[in-house]
Image (cartoon, rainbow, N blue to C red; front, side):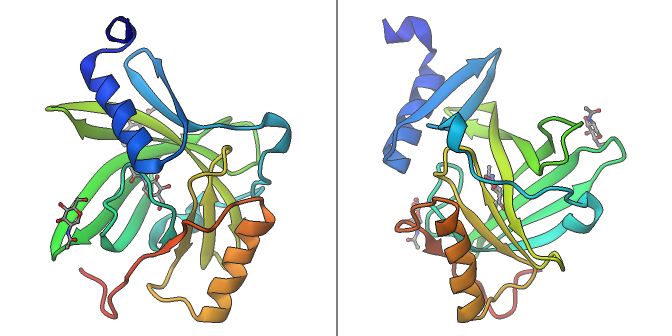
Length: 205
Ligand SMILES: *[C@@H]1O[C@H](CO)[C@@H](O)[C@H](O)[C@H]1NC(C)=O
Ligand SMILES: *[C@@H]1O[C@H](CO)[C@@H](O)[C@H](O)[C@H]1NC(C)=O
Ligand SMILES: *[C@@H]1O[C@H](CO)[C@@H](O)[C@H](O)[C@H]1NC(C)=O
C-alpha cells in the first residue's frame, strides 16, 4: 500500500527524516519535488522580518547554533552558509560543514515566497543525494530576526522546529548569544535541542 503512494527512495527519505528529527514531519510530493515541512499552526506563525535588503544580507554567515536537521551532519564543525545574489533576484546558496577535516557541502538556491510581500519569507531548494539518486527538496527559510547592522540573523520556519542562529563572525560573545536564544524563545521556539556548532578560531578558507 505504502509502496503505491511513494517510491522506495521517497519512503527512505521520509523514514530517515522521521528518525533523525524525532518529530512528525509532513513530506508532500509536488511533482518530483520533496517538500520538507513541520507541523504548522497558520494562526500562530512566527513573526518575520520586513523589508530585508537582500544585497546587504548575502555573503557569508557562520552557523553559531542550530537544531539538528536531516540535511546537516550532526557532528559537523565550522558550519557556514554563503549566499550570492543572482541578477534575476534568486540567491545562490552554498552550505558547508567539516567532519574530521573533510569538507561537506550542499548547493541550492533561494527565492522569495511571494515577490510582492515585504516579509523575509524565502523558500530554499536543494539537490539532495539520496539512495543513489539526487532529489530536489524544498524547505522554508524565514528570517525571524536581523539586527540593524546585518551581523546576526535568526532563521526559522513556520512549524517552529528548525532554527538557525547565524552570525557574520565565527564567534559570538555569551551575552549576545543569550539574547539571540531569548529572541527565539520569545518567538515560541523550544530551544532545548539547540546545539552550539564548534567554530575554529581560524575558519577554513
Ligand atoms: C543551509 O543552511 C541554512 C542556514 O544557514 C539552513 O536554513 C538550510 O536548511 C541549510 N540547508 C541544507 C540543505 O543544509
Ligand atoms: C560523524 O557522524 C557520522 C554520521 O552521522 C559518522 O559516520 C562519523 O563517524 C561521525 N564522526 C565523528 C568524528 O564522530
Ligand atoms: C536565475 O539565475 C541563476 C544564475 O544565473 C540561474 O541558475 C537560475 O536558473 C535563474 N533562475 C530563474 C528562475 O530564472
